[in-house]
Image 1 (cartoon, rainbow, N blue to C red):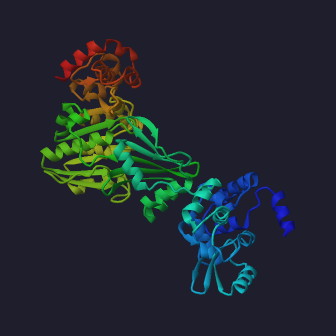
Image 2 (cartoon, one colour):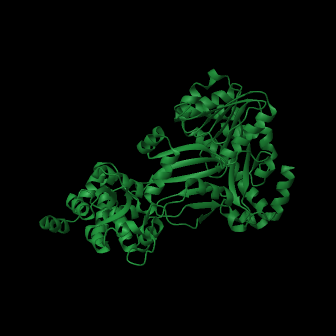
Image 3 (cartoon, rainbow, N blue to C red):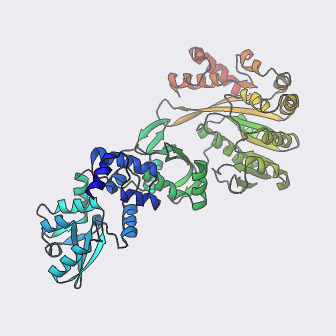
Amino acid sequence: MAKENSEAKSIPGRKHRLGELMMEYGYISEEQLETALKRQMHDGGQLGSILIDMGYIGVDDLLKFLGKHFEVKPVNLFSINISQHVLDLIPLEKMRTLRALPIRLEGHELVLAMVAPQDFVTINDLGFSLGMKIRPVVTPSFMMEAALQSLTGDYGEGISGEVIRRTAEALSLRIEKAPKLKNLLEEMVKQGASDMFISAGSPPSLKISSVLKRMPMGVLSPADCEKYARELLNDDQWRSFQSENDFEIALNVKEIGRFRIAFYKQRNTVSIAFRSLPEVLPSMEALNLPDWVHDFALKPQGLIMVCGPAGHGKSTTMAKMVDIINDNRRCNIITLEDPVEYLHKHKKCNVNQREVGRDCASFNDGLRSIFRQSPDVIVVGEMRDKDSFEIALRAAHTGHLVISTVHADNSTGIIERVINMFPSHQQNLIRSLLAASLLCTISQRLIPRKDGKGQILAVEKFINSYRMKNLIREEKTHMIRTQMQTASDEFIPMDFVLADLYARGLVAFDDAARYMESIGTLQNASLQNGLLAAKEG
């Protein structure tokens, strides 16, 4: 035995037997075990408590493992109270020597918490000396250490699990539980945060008016983050996440709200991003959407495309357009979303919301079969490939209204983004189809309000007028931004919109400048404000 211990100290990374078994049972990975063993060699301590401290397992996991391994019932000393007359059965020095703690009497049977419940010599000796039967249960070594330390002082009428817990904390053992997920989501809604981020090694963080704020609580462990994910995902979803390393859902949490939730891996640990989704869509005025968006949403056919960075309200803008149609037309709306974010009730329209991955395999698959569903309006959460665009263009050209988001820098960049998806020999045809079917493109940014009360939407306007159609067909869309230096009925660049918001005192100079192509535009903000008001009026 001495030789084995000597070898264990001399060979870096030698696996501890307890750790090997936990790895075999699937509680920890080999990488986690190696990391914990390195820390043990450096700092000392019990492996079980180190694994808990590093967040690789929880207390319940360790208890379950010990019970399974030793084939006896495990006991959590933090959750029980031990009376003085039970503790008086065994002298304190003997408890320390044997690493055993009497916890209760059941008739003539003493329940004895032990670190090594298969030490039958100790069990037999105690049973003989006490004249009663001993029933061993297993407890982790760090709990036993905390309990024995708790008995050093005056423990009066016995000791409680809370006293043992506080002693463990004083011994720098990580036993604090992470906050309940429900409580975190309630705080997110209470604070008016748009997002919440869960990541190992950091406290939960909220994004309020585009500013990240850490919540006043301890850091989360990898095990905490994984526990939250397992709480939110069913078995099939969890397996998919483990396979793909990212996953996305939308979920109603009872009495709290609806959230879009993105799961992803970083540094081999689980991270989660929550986006709060209002159950009732705000008005056009509250969203700061211009009136012309309302007008184009009610067009009977054509293509509307929305672009902007992630988190800048594209989904909300599209959902509002669906809401406008639902309030004013009598038609059949089919949406393809990943995931379904805003839930629409059937008003004047039938609104059929299909979720990618659940109701159809992909956006492309959903679009290929969509004509058999007799849609009047087609809403696509995101068009990512040429096949999807080809179907969308055909739909817009044959009497359907199509609304979708596209990854592009601005409202004119969308056009080139779509065309460049296709091989060169098809691009002239696509230009012609796009020029004929495009209604408008929308580029948007959410800017922090100067008064600190949330964000305000800035919308760049591109209307596909007769003049714009010619520029698209003639491959001159790049000229729109360079030649149109003033706002017009067809095109209002983002710089003009931001300058207007700044001139009206709604956004700060630095926040407006961050999203401008030419910062000099802000110098004449008052003049531009007058021009913009005239054009919008």
